[in-house]
Image 1: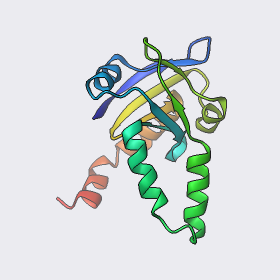
Image 2: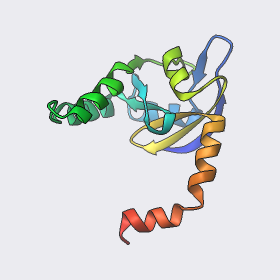
Image 3: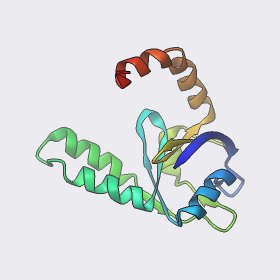
Image 4: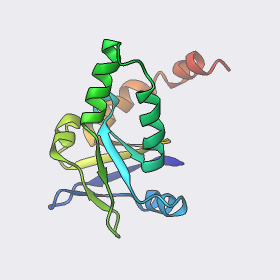
Length: 145
């Protein structure tokens, strides 16, 4: 549902605006509320409400007797916050999430099918540089084509 790479910046009031393409998709699918939380690789995950509920059920079904499950759920859910973008698509990212992702002002928003990821621009560029050269090998390893 979400695809693409978009450069944006946090405004003087601490707000981020959703890319117009994301706003179009959100309108098409009736998405009004999103959930932000700590993502992997030091980015912020952003889920539409329906996808958040799906992920929540998946994580709730995992055994809480396993230490790794407890740790993951604590970090994932304690960082969660719901946001409803205003009519211009603006919303505030809490400072603890910006700190986690190392975000100051310049961000890259990427669509990853069922979620968006919000990256500090420099962190995204570093990740992309490190990972893009092995894209074909990664595809071969995980896709079994």
